[in-house]
Length: 143
Image (cartoon, rainbow, N blue to C red; front, side):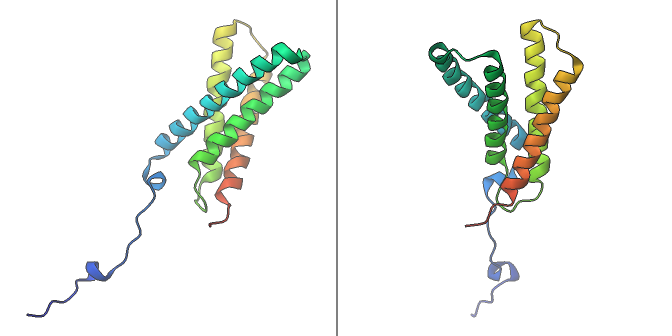
């Protein structure tokens, strides 16, 4: 008896990568945890270097901002796929949440009250940096 292929049997389907099946919030949480890990490693290395180099306060502030941006870039890189849409949104959202958590922890743990504009500028830097990183990483060429 002859067998005939069914429409589903002749169709070739590609499996999606695990990254594409994750919900947006799962991806953001994953990126946030990666960003926090990068921050902790960089702060530890910088703290060890500070003992040896003895930098000025302005240098310390600049390095802290660079560490934050690097963390957001790496977190965004890990959650945005090549050629995937929405990279700018993922990056901006990650930057917003990362900086909001950082600003909140700083205010809670240090007991210092910075002006509202200082907090707002930090959060804006995170959103802008994350959005730029997301746009860059979603436009990577497929290999």
